[in-house]
Length: 395
Image 1 (cartoon, rainbow, N blue to C red):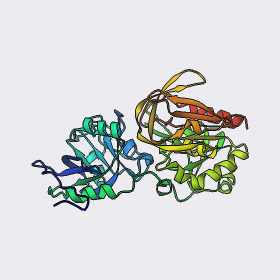
Image 2: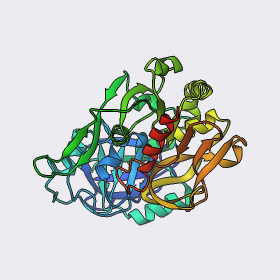
Image 3: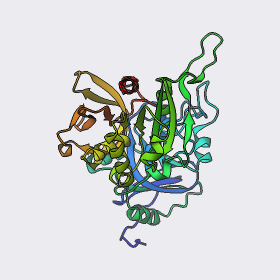
Image 4: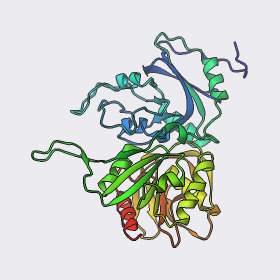
């Protein structure tokens, strides 16, 4: 029987235990994994070859169901070290092949077990090339994902859920993933075993600069990179006021990544950033932090049709002419034509020419759209943390 939107479900193939239903009525059948539940969100794709656990725990993926274009997901299992936040904000995952048994000395559990522990459903056996082309050509759709081990799938209901989900545009999700209280961070980057020193994350015990990181959805490895660069890091909630930030007497302020529509988050974040910039505070922003900074400087942001999500995105530094291979995850972008003359575009995407970096002329303020902490991804952009420390040294 058709649902209230006139949609009638096709007959599922035999043995089906999961389905992904898009708002336009497209149905992808498959085999379920992870939690037996239903999740609704924006369906996007990520082209990274490694780091699926880091991707699933990246707060920037709040509200999204992630399609992995790389077919071998789950082959290194899961552990408690390769996470970017304790509670994964993604809503589910879509895979081509079934998850294999883990084969890695650092694995402590199967990916399927890890997904179940976080109430995350998944679907495998999907033609991810077809789904990726659909997203590439028509934009990221809303979708509903259901894993039903008994095979009972109400496709009409899933379609209605996808149609009725409001989408990410206009959503302020930074508040949902941000910390609730201020805290200190001193954990630094991972180091492999050498001599008598075991492998694991280090500690910053002799910081040279004090940094306040505004948590719009900060990944742990970003904070580790700041600590590794010699910073004493204090993390504050996304809603922190300028007074909250300045009472820590920072040498600089870092604006973290995060999910949702930057214009919605900007309602409370932009006035704070304007006050910090007026006080000549060194500021470094990435991802959502980059977009927040652009809004504070008079620019505008907009929704991208398909977004940038992967670990192989080429970005050109217009000052040096060098090309960096970067890790990216964003569905909104800064409108370069909206930026005032006081702002200089420093980096552009070689995929589509979009703005990937900017700086404020005459002030120690800069940002990039991509993820220089690279977790997962290449380390081409780690130098940006040292650049931030150098700017603080000139204060």
